[in-house]
Every structure is written in C-alpha cells, then in structure tokens.
Amino acid sequence: MLKKLFGTDGLRGQVNHFPMQPEVIIRLGLAAGQYFRNSTKRHRVLIGKDTRLSGYVFETALTSGLCASGMDVYLVGPLPTPAISFLAKNMRADLGIVISASHNPFQDNGIKFFDRDGFKLRREVEEDISELVLALESNWDSPEASRIGRAFKLEDSPGRYIVSLKNSFPSHLTLDGLKIVLDCANGAAYRVAPLVFQELGAEVVKLGVEPNGLNINEQCGSLHPEHVQHQVLESGADLGIALDGDGDRVILVDERGTVLDGDQVLAICAKDGLDKKALPGNKLVATVMSNMALEIFMKDNGGELIRTPVGDKNVVQAMCEHGVLLGGEQSGHLIFLEYSTTGDGILAALQMLKIMRENEKPASELAGLLELFPQQLLNVPVERKTPFESVPRLTAAVREAELRLGVTGRVLLRYSGTESKARVMVEGEDRGLVESTVLELADIIRECVK
Image (cartoon, rainbow, N blue to C red):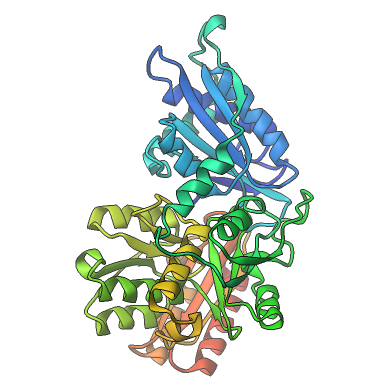
C-alpha cells in the first residue's frame, strides 16, 4: 500500500484503486471505530453519501468495519456534506462520515470525517487512523460478540437539516415573489435544496435533480454555471444557484446573468457585516487562491483579510483561532461559523438572499464590489509530486515571473491534495502577461517535474 491515505480533504481517488478500494475502506471503518471507541457506552456514527453509484460499495464497507469495531451506525442516505456535520453535532454522535468526492466525476469517490462538534478531523487524528489502516500487521482491539454494533436507517434526517437551514434565515422574511434557478449537480442536495427555497416561498426552477449514479457533476452544477446563467436569463429569475456534487460549495448568478464566484459573494457578505458592525474584528478569512481584489477591498473598508493554505479545513481553523465568523474559498466553499462548522452551499445562498431581501435590492446591485485582477489557473498532470523548490529551472522562472508581474502580481504553485496534478496560478494587472506566464510555468513543470 501507499504510505499516504488522507489528502487535504479526507480520502479521495478513483473507485477500485487505492485508497478507494473496499478492502481498504473496511479497514478504515475498523480503525476509525477503534480510535473513537473509548468507553463501554454505545457509540454512534452517522454515514451520509452523495449520489455516486459506488456509494453503495463504500457505505457497506464502512458499516461492516464500524459495526465490527463496536460502533452503532446510522445511515442517512444521500445528503449534503454539511448536513452530516450538522447531524453529528446535533445528535451528539461520536463521528460523522461522508462518502463523496465532491466536484469530481462519478469515477472517483472519497471519505470525509467530522468529529462530535461538527468539525473535520485534525491532521494528527487522521495520521493516527492512517497508521492503523496501513499497518502491515493487524492487531484490532475487537469487542466481544455481544458488543458489536448495529446498523439503522435515520429516516427523518433530511427534515432535520432543512429545519436547521430555514432557521438561519430571518423569521420575519420570506422569499415570496422571487424566482430562483437551482442546479443541484445531480448530487447530494437534489432532494433537500429545492424544498428549502420552496418552503421559504420562492418559485424554483430545478436543474440537475435527476441523479442516476453516473451523472453527478456531469456538465452541471458549480463547475458549469453557464447552464444556470442561461436559465436565469431565459426565465427572468432573480438569482441562480449552482451547487456541487456534495452541496458544500456554491456559485451564484445574478439576474443579469453575471456569475459570482466565492470571492465576490464573500465581499457582499463581508460588506453587509461591516455595515452592521457584525463582523468580529472586521476580519475575513480566505485562502491564498483568493483574488487580490478581495484583500484590497477589505483594506479599503477598514477590514483585514487573513489568508490560509487551500482547503476549507484550513479556513475554519483560522476562523476559530482568530474569532472570525465569515470565511471561504474562491471556489465557493463559504463558511458562516454562526450557523455551520463547514462549507454549505445552500446556507451561503440563503445568506445572499437575506441581504437581497433586507436591502430590497437585486443581486446585481449588491455585486460589483470587486474589480477582479486577471487571474489564471492551469492544472498540470504529474506522476509524482516533486518539491518545486528542488527544480532549479522552475524556481528561477518563478523569480523572473514575479519581477515581471511587479508588486500587484503573484505566482502560486501547489500540488492538489486530492488529485495527481500541479496547480499553477498567476495573477496580475496585465492579462496578456498573466496568460503567457502561466503557460510558460506549466510547460516547465511538464518538462522538469517527473
């Protein structure tokens, strides 16, 4: 087996290839159960999933390992990732598990863990579990036969999550009279998301709500907001909402068809918080990928942007450390810590709709706070993740590029935590220079990073 099990967001990989193999996931269930079983009381774990065909395989494998280790398993079926975070905390469970590869195609799948407080597991906990899974000799601390776990179906979990989302929307407001285009990416939110907006009064035009196990994220959802964009313009909708396969990220489209990414939505929500003096410390947390325009916007409005490495887990950690309530990623992972401990696309859309209702303004009037710097991202497939600093030609090219871009530009190289890819991001004021620089660096990586 490979030594590395967890990436930046749990396990992820191609189905029937390491680590997403049934035999590995059974061991993962055994290891997680052993790690979290710390007394003689009955221990509970929740398992949710998205709509991938392979979810049945890994749900069964996890359940087997967890029950064998003495954990009672509650199966909730297809539900967004943030629903499992909420339910784990709400039910005082020992653990919440999501089977999903987020925005990846159906051929991939993954496993994410949440602790009893609804937060993703700390890195050191993941490493301890990895050691148990990857050990050459198994020495499981198995309970006696009378203490193994049982498996149950939790039938009312969608309703519990829907109520929690509606409680985040002011009780004196409704969505009456609004038309919303909603793309659920044929993923985990396909049942609950339409109900949330409909029950608050909106007319909902539904896209991506016919999953077949193979079409999750396929030319739909947050990776392809052009479909929502087209439908918003055609139907005269007030807002377009594009979720990803596990419902933890969102891309919005205003009534004029303008796509709003995570940075732009963060700016709108931060401005609202600053105006209401409801943004603790006037601080916002985002990652190194967020556009420089967001950082300038916060400074110009008397606030501060705190940057973290990529990954919503890193954003949440920084938010907790600095006492910040709002944070997120350019990709659409938006965290409203007052209501949720992880990114939630439905919740983020509700916060945007709340601001629209409170200010009696369309989305297009609230948007436009950022004049985004030209930014380009290229993904380069790699066989192994050689440290960039060990490639002299590449480090020299980066130094030269940064000099050309000047103080208003930057270069960011990183490896994906979930795929065998190097990510090359270049940002600056001159679009042509940005485009030529990102191509140059990508070519060097193809030639030199082996």
